[in-house]
Image (tube, rainbow, N blue to C red; front, side):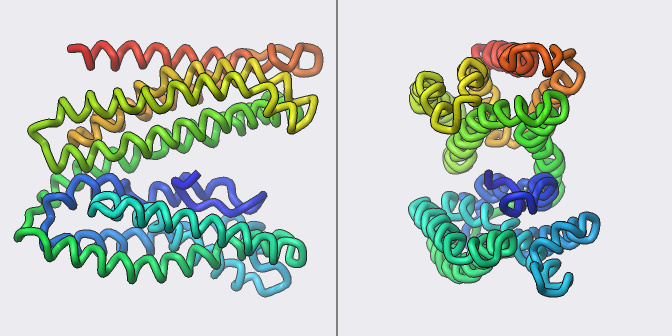
Length: 379
């Protein structure tokens, strides 16, 4: 996933939570404010990037010092300081990588974001193939850090010209007061931890409570929910730009976004449930017990789509505290349920029954929230 700093393989772990928070939710903020920024756009964009990059680098530095094994793996046979430098560069670059995409969408150049992400993925795979065999774990790290640094360097130059052209085509422009910006960014930045908890802590709790074997099956099934959830978040984030451009059509734009979201993602969920068993079978016979678990989780994602839409609508409306309240409460309840619910004995019970309480907790929480936000939408 793209919401933070995570090194490949076993090198990462806590990074997504911390670097995602270092972005301060400025990606969505820029999508909301750029349409009206006019000639102030350059200052707004690059001031935000110059804030995010050092914060993300500091996160990488702190993470490497607190968990030195990460920097040691990154360094390979080189000194510890080299591994620490790689970690700082990678996290500083990745901290603004996603924000570049938000800016390109906000200034009307989304196709540049698609090409940028596609070429980045190709470069990573190519470097991994070239370096992974000879340098092992360090090769995996370099295949991540080198493209990040290069793509950020080139992308920043491209962004400079794109944003300057966007600014020149606008009027004098206006920006919200700093107090208004802080009132939106502060709660929504904190709320990013809700998504991090939902995406990352559930599989960790599953592994801890179910054991490695069953936990690995649940992890694979859970990744399907993370992929769809993340895609739906990025899909609905465009509502922030649309609403900023045409605030008088906010209600119509929200309904249109919700309709398009359901049109795109509901068939994908049905297809995912249908293909669950054959896909898991490819991974190995032992993974097929997760097919009904995967299907049930995707039912939960169906309800979760309504929560994702409501989160996007609140961000588009600038309701930072409402966004934070909904995100943290929804994610917190799922994590709390997974932490506290009694499980059958993994040594004697069928694996599907061991995973069932986690699944029921996720589906029930999302269904309740879908009903609540749906009733609010009808009103």
